Image 1 (cartoon, rainbow, N blue to C red):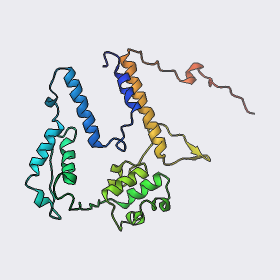
Image 2: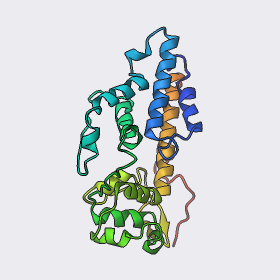
Image 3: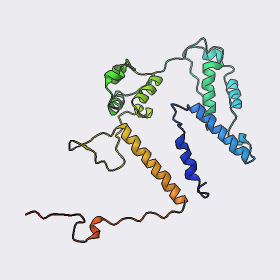
Image 4: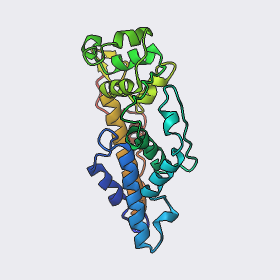
Length: 252
C-alpha cells in the first residue's frame, strides 16, 4: 500500500469508525479481525484456516476441554486456568468465558465468585483529582469510594473498570504502586495568573496525543508520496547579524 500511495488513505478510514472497547468489545474485535483475514485470504486463493482457527472449531474445543469438569466447576472455590499459548484474536479465551456463563448445565444455578482486586489507595485518589472530580460527586456512583481511598475496602474488577471510565484514566494506571507522573510531550508554556499550570488535564493530553498521531500519519504519507523534507529555517537572529530581528527602542 505504501508503494501504491494508498497507505494514508486506508489508515485515515479508521478515524471514521469508533473502535473504542466501550463500543466494540474485545470479543467482537476478534470476530472482525477473523472476518478480515477470511476475506483477504479468499481473494488470494488461500485457506483462512491457515492463519486462524474458525470460531465454531474453537467452541467445540472448549466443550471438549470442560466436558469432565462441569461437576467440579460447580463446587464453590474451584479455580481452573486456561492457557492459550498461540493466542491471536483471543477466541479460545472468549469462548471459555462464554461457556462458563451460559454453556454448561450449572451456570444458571451457581453464581460466580466476586473477585476483588488489590489496588493502592494513592492511584485512586490521583485519578479522581486528575479528572477534577469531587469525591462527593463520585460517591453517588461508587458508595465505597472513601473506603477504597483509605485502604479499608477493595473494589471489584468491574467497579474498578467503571471508576477508570468515570475518571478518564487507563485502568492499568490504577494497578501501579504509585501514581504515574504525566508530562506534556511538548514545551508547556501554559500559565494562569502568571503562574505555571502544574498538572495537565486528561483532555489536554488526549488532544496532544491525537495531534501527534496525525502528524505521524501525514509524515508517513508525505514520505510515501515522495515529498521533500521541509527545509529548516535559520534562527531569526541570523537574519541581521548584530541586531535583533524585531523593532526595539533605546531607553535613556
